[in-house]
Length: 477
Ligand SMILES: Cc1cc2nc3c(=O)[nH]c(=O)nc-3n(C[C@H](O)[C@H](O)[C@H](O)COP(=O)(O)OP(=O)(O)OC[C@H]3O[C@@H](n4cnc5c(N)ncnc54)[C@H](O)[C@@H]3O)c2cc1C
Image 1 (spheres, helix red, strand yellow):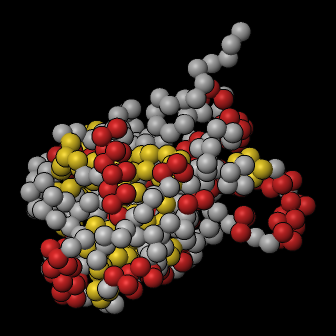
Image 2 (cartoon, protein in one colour):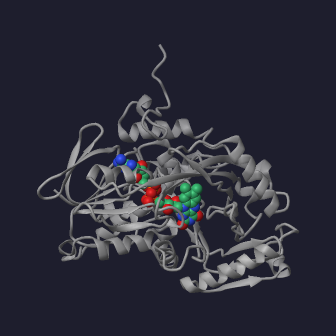
Image 3 (cartoon, rainbow, N blue to C red):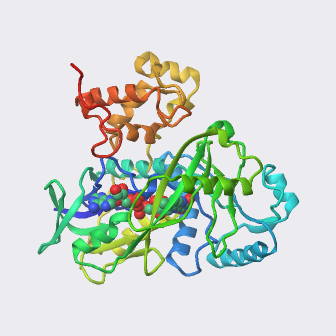
């Protein structure tokens, strides 16, 4: 019997799990996919928002501002790259200018420091490639960028190092209330029991609440499509550039990523169901808007496109972070759309300190380790240090991913580390092998071979990402 089952291995589930392991309790994370971070947390803009957007007093505003303040330390402890690059909401004309003043006041009410409106001239000094038509901008010095999957994986890995369990490919389809808590059953008939459930299943959180007997969580889906440009174009902008929001929406953003790429997007399209396909129309609209924001965006350097789905709370349009009013022992953390990535550390702390039963927090985990070694570290070492490692293990001298210069030694190491990488894309999210210009064209077969060796499974069982995504059908005769 676990004390707590966290359902959903995204950035918020990861933050909660990590926080739980500060106490002496038995916690398990249940994730339906073969790897963690397969929902909204893997496909978003990676922006640590300052907090001027959400309405004062809303959960979104409160957790955004708190999360922003916590992020630098949180990322450092977890060995994750974070950059405080600052953001600009750009105005194109007088109507936008009025909106910027509104956002400035709202931001101050929310407790955001360092907001100011800057003039066209200063704006151009900060961003030489910004459109000639941009007139002024709201500058937020606390805006930042982070890699969302690195952050999620590190938090879950750290929680596991501190004693939490992870069960992947555990698609929860049935939940039964028992005398002491719940029996939670997966699609393939496995089951675990837990006293308390924390429902943080993103797009699946309405369904999880329903399975427990709580029909109050209604989730809507809004897709966002993106283009990603090669690092070669990484100096296009240095801040995150947003359009001024209008009744028609927020427009897209143009930003650099913490890994030095340029990200353009996302669109905002209501969907009847969860769907992460990209579309020609969606990507065309990203291109059109990028051309409005910056002069000559180097679109020839596009290396990939992708989409993520925001799972929002349909009626409340705010984060739901509370004990269920209908089912004892169920805590709902649902409808965590943007700024959920930014808010994750603050949500994790709040859920554990304020919502879980007090008796579970009676004893501290004395052996709690708050730091985690970064997954990606080898490339940043000096030649002398690299050579020392290669002398001990020649695998660190064999480059597998030519674009990102990732070695066989690093790949083998990551497959053995918490949370274990078991698919080609899981290796990619941890080390960037396959994320460069060729997008895995060269390294994918070798990564698959290494996975097959390390996991001791036949090559034709190695998956690219989800169930059914095996790369090979079988051996030819
Ligand atoms: C296009 C887009 C752009 C965004 N940009 C930003 C941004 O720049 N900054 C920011 O702060 N926020 C941003 N966000 C919001 C942020 O990505 C989310 O708030 C955050 O990732 C939500 O995390 P989560 O853990 O709640 O959900 P998820 O990451 O979706 O995790 C839920 C997990 O639950 C699992 N699951 C679902 N059903 C089941 C089941 N039945 N059994 C077991 N497991 C299950 C899923 O597989 C998934 O792994 C953006 C979101 C999108 C989509």
